[in-house]
Image 1: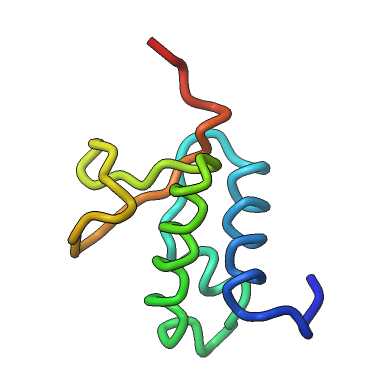
Image 2: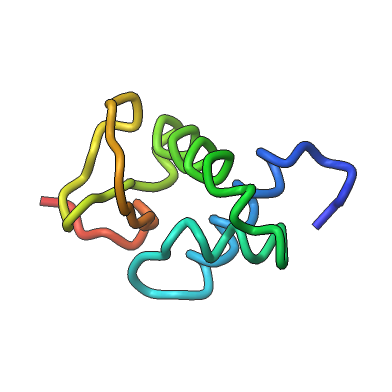
Length: 90
């Protein structure tokens, strides 16, 4: 990971990297911890913003309680991020 890249880019790369290595979904805190180490809590909102951007681009889905949420919606609370590539299509 290039430390000169903007934090949003680094967080997006961390999200995609974690999803590439795992079946299922991740918690945004996992990406924040991968990028921020002990200061991961400071990165939670930027991580959620990165997840929104990736969802808008169609790379991931953001879910709450197993339901996909609109990346531009007004959602709060716990979320999960999952890769669109690994999800079966109806």
